[in-house]
Length: 175
Image (tube, rainbow, N blue to C red):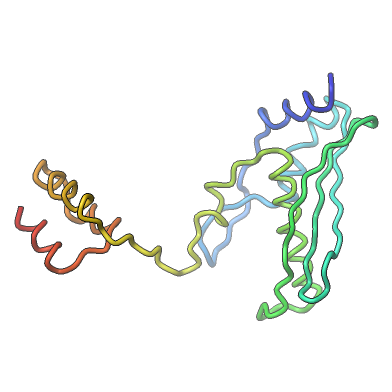
């Protein structure tokens, strides 16, 4: 079996639970360690190795490039992630700042290599305490909204998606 086919097998059969919990943001996530642990059965079965390497590619500001590789001894396939080191991170010592960037980079390099869909990960869904900006409703969408409300739809559903003026909200409420 070629390395590409072996990697495809991992990409299509890979499962890793989000076993870590962020109590501040109130979400579950998976770490680089979780991803590596979930790949171990594949490594033995397919006789491949996975490595992760980090390089500091810029000093001012500090930027790391993390490379996740899979190899069968003959071929190697790589995936990279580039992350910055936040030097202003409050409550962290300098080694912790680099460690946080390293962990983040490993997670995303491995996620890229194994095609882990992170659309439901906290990094993709967490707004970090900021409310998502609502879209201003267009005339065409307002016309659709009126039809929706007339057919039994809720005004609150429209308000959750669109920013309405008082007049628009009043008009919808009166339908």
